[in-house]
Image (cartoon, rainbow, N blue to C red; front, side, top):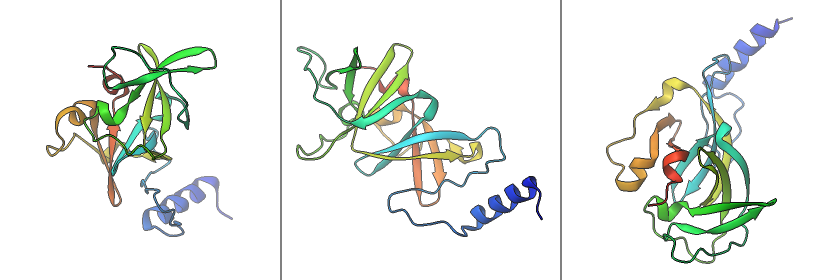
Length: 177
């Protein structure tokens, strides 16, 4: 019979070897060692083909985008205002904020409400991913190939198996220029 510590160690070894890891389509595998107290959890999402994430502690909620009230004379980045249980929250189209092309009109849009120092802000994204846990040693500064507004709003990247997770800075991403 194994002790709890031995079971945790064996599970970590199986994870590192990839044993028993199911294929979940768009899900990305973050090699995490749950024994490390400095691991970080990210709520992930997609903008076009880019895989981004925000720290879970900054996420208030996630839902299918609601109808918004337009804000006349505002920046094109501001998609409108939503009423979330009696609170009026500004909505930012993250594609426009980060310099991506506009999404096709027929595509579904998702919302991630994040907490910032100025209060909650609703970010429009293309698709929601999973909550993943990443080790701090996988973090690197933003690559030089990122340009413009995207590079400014990214704290850095996590090198995962088969992809890069762009760590979005919610304070910078929610600023309206």
